Image (cartoon, rainbow, N blue to C red; front, side, top):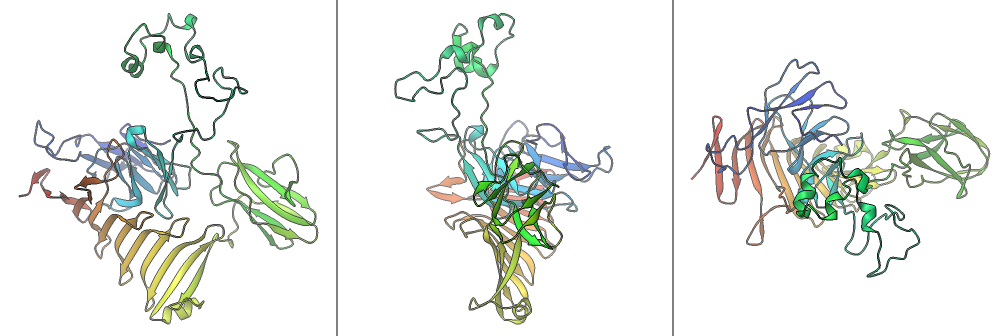
Length: 459
């Protein structure tokens, strides 16, 4: 999972550790003996694997568990908007908004760095999955009001042939309890069970605490087939560390029962071929695009993508939407550039003026802008996140040196409330910074300013 509860967190890729500075703890900035400052203090610092070369502390003003992204590129504090500090940014460093959601605990989903998972509702709400390519969140609930997703029958003493009907027993209580012979030597039952059951003589006091629910937040990436140099290349999906092998289909039928392993070769007859990636967990990807062979060939299952292969291609357009070359676009007063993914279609849209990048929209799977970047003289000046309805979720302003000077966004609440509300309107939490260091906080009519190591109310 990679969620940090302790003081040290090792980067999964780079030779660096993040340590929490315990000189700055909960309510450090508040008036002694009070909690009059509405944010908690957490300072973090980097150091080498042997504890050498500690850096200057960088501030994350809200208390949080923390994690690294799967590729080690971002340090991720939780309990707030999904944000991160680039692993090698010089100090003082920006804390960047990375997606259009707020989460509680945060952790990586896989090793690619593209996917981040987070909890909501104090751990009782939906699991949220953020796609950092577009900045969008995908929410997954373990059950609906009337059914479970991916229900497996026959577990814990149930009968897989029993029909599910109202007022009919599904499972026996005894199958969920520790057997009597294992109860006498047991220590005091877990506090959570004692607090919920209360009656020490209730049989529920002996319930098993081992139910585990698995949420599949994404399927494996689709591989690709291409004919090249007299053979067929099977190119692994963009993220393929967990791939066990590939299922090869000819004319819609399995070519063989066993999976084809990375690095293997396979003789192919004429036909229409597709392939799907299968992970060690058993999860299977959608099939690749079909490739038709009119004669025999050999399939080479590559272990990584060739240097000349790209999942995305650029498409340059005139202001009227007509295809043009990149050279023509650079000379035009206005032009556009689209990043077109092999499977996902247009994932990014850029606007260019007089040969300089002016705006970029990163799009979700429905083609809606989620992350919007605005540039001045080709330098990033503003970053905004939007939801699917086009509503503003967060804003960050940058100076000419790349430091965030202003950020306003949502805040995570125990019940999963996405933003602070007043009279039905959303009031963002705002931070003002100087060269990466927060110096002022505002929410609605409340203002706090930094004076030395303290924060005081501003009238």
